[in-house]
Image (cartoon, rainbow, N blue to C red; front, side, top):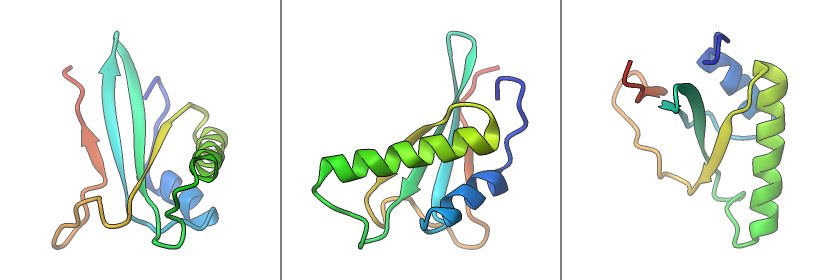
Amino acid sequence: IRGVNVFPSQIETVLLNQGYPANYQILVGRVNNTDTLDVLVEMTPEMFTDNLGEINRRQKELVDGLRAMLGIKANVKLVAPKSIARSEGKAVRVIDNRKI
């Protein structure tokens, strides 16, 4: 992504260090010939709240943590508990939507 090797294990390390469960998905896309990185992170029921300020704060902490680990900006979307599809066997962590 933008000349940087990004490994799912790096993203997982940031999530686990900040207290998130290991259920996430990485969406790679392309806008105007530039790669984009979106990370969908499932919140735990305890983290899920109606307080938008709290959700925005958590989102910013993740963006900052990922930027420090990866060296590039990743868009983070916090999603409701159990909203990321689970699969039998190996989890699908990376979805590459680029049309190269």
